[in-house]
Structure formats: structure tokens, C-alpha cells
Amino acid sequence: MTFSVAVSGATGYAGGEVLRLLAHHPQVQIGAVAAHSNAGQRLGDLQPHLHAFADRVLVDSTVESLAGHDVVFLALPHGRSGEIAAQLPEGTIVIDAAADHRLESAEAWEQFYGSAHAGTWPYGLPEMIVDPHGTRQRSRLEGQSRIAVPGCYPTGSQLALAPAVAAGAVETTDIVIVAASGTSGAGKALKPHLLGAEVMGNMSAYGVGGVHRHTPEIEQGLGWVAGGREVTVSFTPTLAPMPRGILTTATAKLTGTMAATAVRDFYVDTYAQEPFVHVLPEGQMPTTQAVLGSNHVQLQVVADERAGRLIVVAALDNLTKGTAGGAIQSMNIALGLPEQTGLTQQGVAP
Ligand SMILES: NC(=O)C1=CN([C@@H]2O[C@H](COP(=O)(O)OP(=O)(O)OC[C@H]3O[C@@H](n4cnc5c(N)ncnc54)[C@H](OP(=O)(O)O)[C@@H]3O)[C@@H](O)[C@H]2O)C=CC1
Ligand SMILES: CC(=O)N[C@@H](CCC(=O)OP(=O)(O)O)C(=O)O
Image (tube, rainbow, N blue to C red; front, top):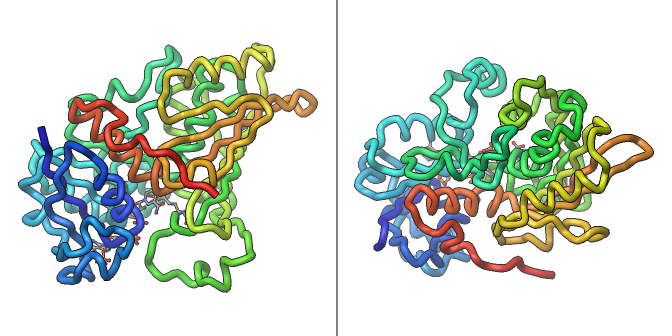
């Protein structure tokens, strides 16, 4: 069976990555390829790497151009995504890469995004443990027609910490996350701090002081696992001079209820059957290069017994597992297809 798919935001980084991956999906046929200011242009002029769709002419992202497909991917700015999604038919599977439908708390949404909350959809992170009993999120995505793709930082952060929180191995009010992202995480829109001269040979922190909008998203997900315990996360993003990739270093105070080796073993068991999440052999560290262009997440789990902290390092590609790959994985689950369909590629190195 073949499903018709529309991609809205096709000229952007996230939408372009959705198209790159879907070109290899055996059960998908690409229908509308939609954008906004570039409507009427040839896709190949804006996304020269997408040879399979080079001669497609971009249409505007409207309800009319997107409705009528089995699946619609929205890779649009926050807000616009929610507006369009609200008008799409209920029977259409809508996979939203923007943040509009990720948060359950309207108050947190308004505080961090400064607009009205569009609502909450099932959260598209299939491998994540989502309660203290070890339930995975994938069971909540089957048959769904609306899915909110996680933010790129929350993907790595939650996969890095949910097992430790579920196991009661760490203090949930003493969690510190520092993550370095490639610049594509910020999208294509022109921003002065992303000019070549500002980015090349430079690293900088931003969103410092608990103000980055991914903080409530990470706290929400870890809250599901914490079973009523309060969760507080200090999250600091940094910008790295590379186009893609996120390296997350998450640390939390060990409760001491589990031996350090048992915590690591718990991670190995948790992700043993997961095709896209890999706890590396001891001593091997995740790198962004190893996951470039793939849907994989690499993890390493180490206890710093001197400082009494668990350290989990995670590497992923922000555009693949951090957005488009995760989105397609969720679509596969929603459609009842094998989860890895179209996503089996290896990373690109060097
Ligand atoms: N980049 C990343 O790593 C990640 C991105 N996301 C989310 O995915 C979404 C897209 O991000 P990204 O691809 O980086 O952004 P880009 O700026 O690269 O692309 C934005 C896309 O949205 C279209 N667009 C802009 N304004 C409108 C509008 N008013 N109506 C309809 N379409 C519009 C643009 O079309 P045109 O070119 O024609 O103007 C373009 O196709 C965002 O919500 C982002 O937060 C989520 C996780 C990670
Ligand atoms: C490097 C960079 O700027 N990254 C983006 C996060 C990208 C992402 O995950 O997007 P959402 O907005 O969909 O959550 C940022 O920090 O704003």
C-alpha cells in the first residue's frame, strides 16, 4: 500500500530533511511540496541536494494544498503550524515538527512562547520511557492522526535521562544539561548571530538562565517518568561551529540507591531492543559525526563517583533523529508500518 504525503515547509532545513528521507521510503508517494515566500519556485533551485524532487514546483502552504493527502508533515514556524493544523481534516495524519502541540501545560506554553496554546498532541519520541513502569511512548502513537515531533534538544536530553529517572537512580531536582548544537537547529531565516563570521571558529552559549523554551519540554517528559516527584532541570544550549548535530551532556546527582554499574546496565537493558538508540561499549564516547544524517542516537553512561553524579552523553543529528527522522518513525507507527521503514541508513563519516 502506498500513502500520499504532503510536506509543508519544504524549502526549510527540517522540511528538506523530511523529503530527503522520504525519497527512500518504499510506501510513500510525495504529493504537494509546499512553502510560503518561495511558492512558485522550483524546489531544486532552493534545495539542490534533493534531486528526486528537483523539478517540483512549490505551492503555498494552505489548507487546500495540503488536505487530500493521507499524511501531512508540517515543518513551519511555531504558530503558523498550529493555525494550519487546526483546519486540516481529522482523518489526515498530521505530523508537526514545530513546538505548537508539544506541551501539556498552557501556562508553560504562554510563559515560554508568549502566545495562545494550540493544544496537546501525542509526543513523537517512540523509544522514550514515559512512566515509572517502563512503558514506551510508541504504544501511545499507534493509530494516532496527530503527532507532535519533539524539539531537537529534548530528544537527546530525554533519551539520556528518562531511564535514570525511571530507575530512581538520580535526584530529579538536581539535573543539569548542557548541549551543543549545529547551526541548522536555528533554521534558514537570517539571524545576525548565525552569520558565517560569527559562527566559524566560535562557540557560544545562549538561552542561559532557565529561559530556553526546551526547558519545560524536557521537564514535562521527565515528569511523566518521575511518578509524582518534582523535576527541575537546568538547561543551557550552546552553538557549535558545525552545520548539524547535537552533543548533549546531562548530569544528575546520584541517589545512591543503585550501584553505578547497575545504573549503566539498566540503560543497556532499556535500549537493547531499540533499533535507533545505542548505548556504546564502555569507554567509547558518542560523537555527532557518527550519527550524521542517520536516525540513530548514541549514548554513554558513566558514574562520576567522586562527585556523586551520573553523566550521560548523547549524540544525534538535530535534523534527522532530532526532527525529520523522528517524524517519519512516528508516521510509520501511526500508519501501522514497521517502525524502521525508510530509516535504515547508516551515518556518514568522516
Ligand atoms: N532545524 C531544526 O533542527 C529543527 C526544527 N524544528 C522545527 O521545525 C520547524 C521548521 O524549522 P526549520 O526547517 O529549521 O526552519 P526554516 O526557517 O529552515 O524553514 C521554514 C519553512 O517554513 C516556511 N514558512 C515560513 N513562514 C511561513 C508561513 N507564514 N506560512 C507557511 N510557511 C512558512 C518557509 O517557506 P519559504 O522558504 O517559502 O518562506 C520554510 O519552508 C520549526 O517550527 C522548527 O522549530 C524542530 C526540531 C529541529
Ligand atoms: C541551534 C538553535 O538555535 N536551535 C534551536 C532549537 C531547534 C528546535 O528544536 O526547534 P523547535 O523550535 O522546534 O523546538 C533553538 O535553540 O532555538
